[in-house]
Length: 90
Image (cartoon, rainbow, N blue to C red; front, side, top):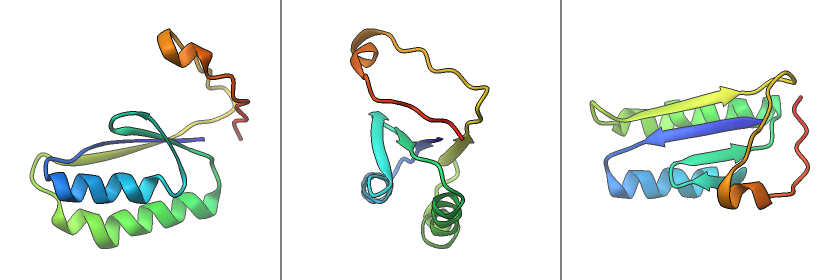
C-alpha cells in the first residue's frame, strides 16, 4: 500500500491534487490518501507530480509518499477502528 500525504497552500492546486489521488485510492484524512500498491500506479503518481504539480509548488508545499512493506502494521482508533476492509501489504 502507498500512503500519500500532502501540504499544499494553494486551494485550487490542492483540490486538483486530491481529485487526482482519488482516482487511485481513498482519503484517510483531509490530506492523506491510501492507495493500493502497484509499481505502475506508483510510477504514474510520481510522474504526474513531477510533470504537472511540482512546477506550481510554493516554497512551503510538500508531498510525501510512503511505500509500506509486509512488515508494516496498521493500528486504528476512533472512527477508523470500524474500517473492516482487508489490507494486503505487498
